[in-house]
Length: 180
Image (cartoon, rainbow, N blue to C red; front, top):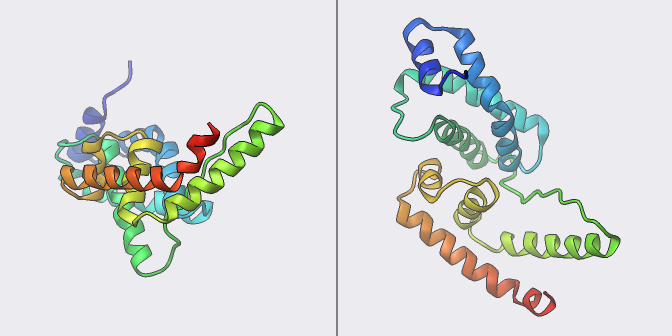
């Protein structure tokens, strides 16, 4: 039986149980590193640094975790803040869409390559907030509430970013509807 995040967090906070924190790290490190790679424009080394810094900050701030959101959402918020601070200081390139899709045939691979190129180009024409909101909800599978928590924005603002971003993507990618 797996120990819940809340139980592990309680052990870390109450008795500074490093083993309990190590279990949290093991539970979330793969997801967080993948997320960090997206925030760091695919730079694996920078993403690893970001993930490590995120866990260090999370450990130091764990007593302040109020469990109003999932632990993973809280971690992603920390990572986002670190990345945003680095981005503002121009130490990293901001979010690029990275997808690795396997195609069954060469024709399909070519179509997917063209589609990916067009989607990447279209995504670059969105505002950074629209890009991030869409990526959080559609690529990373977060709910609108979780995306709002990660982005530190009101829920309505995130929904607006998504709606406007999707609307702009539909216009930018309208030529694909004729092909499909």
